[in-house]
Image 1 (cartoon, rainbow, N blue to C red):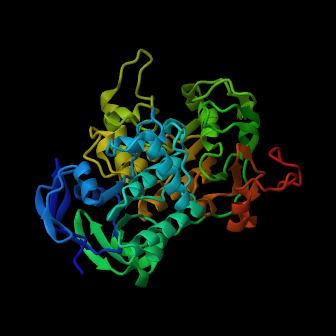
Image 2: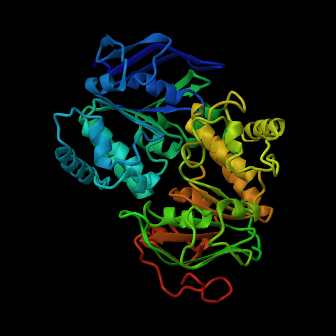
Image 3: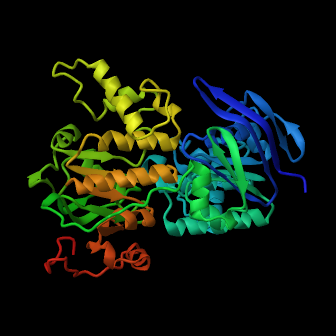
Length: 510
């Protein structure tokens, strides 16, 4: 069988970094081929070379047996190559349909594209409303738009870079069904993921990268998670320990928070109530688009003057600006890395100043040397692969940027930390480190609220769980009493209306 794709001797060097070093890779028709490696191993660069978004310094590419040079993504799409990026390439002010239409032959009308999106999204079980503006979508919904856009071109090779990092378990399982259907029809799939269980369950072959070089090829179906982890990072990830402890007094409380949706496609919050105590981790589960974004906006201060109360150590901060909330000890990590968590064109040092203002004088002068030192400390402590404090945020891989942004807030020693999708796109070693740091904060008395669509993550680090569905919040349940089946049922809004907390009192969220 003629390989769908053959790479030989691929090299790519950036200033100070050899991203790809003499890489060889072969993918057959109908094969789901995993590319595994830690953050900064060169995976995304290699995929961009295949897709024509980056040109290699050396090496060759054969497509269906013929030597080709892919000079642009448009040429790649004409060949039959589609790619779903880890960082979304969507215009926020346009609708989902308009974003898809921009990349297609204009002989197809927007109305036809809209109808086709509905058809493809329904047939593959990846619901997308083509008329919604992208700015109104959660990251999980944006991921579905990117996947449907790729499927619309009926690709011969589909490249997926961390496709399930912000999908719910149910959506991820449906995506696997879709990918198997595509593979059965002859489509080759290159699949990048740090979720080892996914790779073992889905992929036929696995190429491992470390430091820009191929260090191994295995059949993942014959490997354990520990073996794959060792191939990827050179060791097994550390085991997390979450000993039971008595939580302290209430640190953050939400009372009767009701907020009308701010866009036609948003979610209205209905009488949301929540208690977050010092020294505990509360996980927020739920399908994306059920009010998580609106809740985060109310807690972070992005939206002010909300109906209801947001109490921080007993003081109502519902009308306090984000800077004032940070001064009181409330720190926040948004789910969207580029654009909200960091300014892509600014350096890491400049991005540090977005939330860490201790090195800014009252008159507005910057203590430049101290800012550089702090940034270098964050890079070293959280093992961020970057050229240094002056590296632009957009030059980092997704996982390394995530480590930097999470580290920036953890290092500030917050009293309350609200964090969304904490391990989005990071490798197993870095995910274990981030989760360990969150548990260390909890043990030091910090109150931690984690919004995540990864149930495994929430079960691993949370003391209690709540679920958001249709703008409402479930009563809390201790993790020891929760099951995945129960939480899945609650995601449909089917929870008891009179649940009592550990002290036998009716919880405020009931």
